[in-house]
Image (cartoon, rainbow, N blue to C red; front, side, top):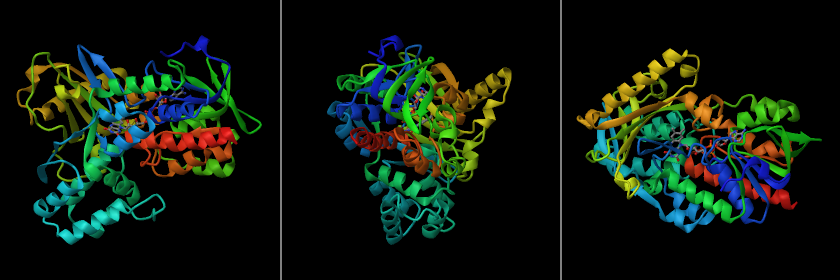
Length: 467
Ligand SMILES: Cc1cc2nc3c(=O)[nH]c(=O)nc-3n(C[C@H](O)[C@H](O)[C@H](O)COP(=O)(O)OP(=O)(O)OC[C@H]3O[C@@H](n4cnc5c(N)ncnc54)[C@H](O)[C@@H]3O)c2cc1C
């Protein structure tokens, strides 16, 4: 059970600000290594963007649409076997757009088949493409863009570019103009074995993680927003919450990297050289979602687990961000998602810009949300013509919603563009004892990226605390 603020001690070895998957993993690893760890979360529940909410008997998952197979190994090694055992494959991934309509298991073998037989790409080109992207790593050339990579292998084939790119743009907000390695690493992760989900839903996963954190001795405190990271004589001293300073040798911020630098720590403690680089960080886009609940007792037919649906003539990352985008994903949650709860829900997700929503007055904001819901239900009717009569709940989230619940700059869903990674990795060289974990640089985002980054940062913090 999370502790109340008044029950906390005055000092810990490490304080983690934020309980996203990155923050929780860092907390868990440090406590496992024997450190006294406090995890402070501003929201009333743990999980950050890995979250859910309940309405009228429905449970809506926010970010449980799919992750790569790598989660199996990562969860087994750094969380526990029971968590690993609930990870299951989503086998029916659907693309439906004016250029092609097809179903796939979203792995290398099936993509090879589709590229060869549906798109008529020669086998040697396909093999070379897979070899190239799977060989990419962080230290590779960062000047090659994804657009250039695609043009090299599939010149002028906008249909193939869409097939390869659209899912990754939804998964991490990257565009054709981002460095090809941000594409290659994430795409190869999925191609390994396909798309996976957590049976039992996000609520079950976060509940199991909370149990593991408590077992390892992490002190949890929710509804505790950190106002300031306290730095004295160039070193971390602790954090300020509700006007009180709690001290620690190390502070790990799972708040966004821009929040961490500009709002929690303050520019003054960093060198000009560091701030020069930090000022160039671009945050990634945000999201809109529409949550659709199907009446208790009603059912819907199997139309696939995850549908990349679009009526836009071609893939265009700007079109994906438009307020009236014609492109969205539908995640269909059948009763198998939460065995025992015989319910169906659908979540429509769209990439979105904070600026398109933040300046609206309340009436216009509510009207735009209603339009979003209407458009999403209409699009869903293309696959389920009779769905409207079966719906008993609809609700929309916008970039403002994501900003309110996570405090992320402009409600970013996937952290920052590539340059954020270097800043996140080098912050502790500027202020000893201060670390950052969480979505940065495109490749460290997503459930797998955030957890893996949590492991990397916990190793840094452990070495620092022992030094
Ligand atoms: C709509 C949407 C769909 C997504 N779908 C998928 C998907 O299908 N698959 C996938 O792998 N990934 C998906 N993602 C991305 C994935 O959810 C995130 O990359 C990942 O969960 C981020 O983890 P994180 O560690 O960066 O922390 P976050 O989840 O960003 O959490 C940060 C935490 O810090 C807390 N915090 C911030 N400031 C403070 C403060 N001052 N004091 C206290 N607490 C603070 C916040 O409240 C929050 O809990 C999706 C994201 C969105 C928005």
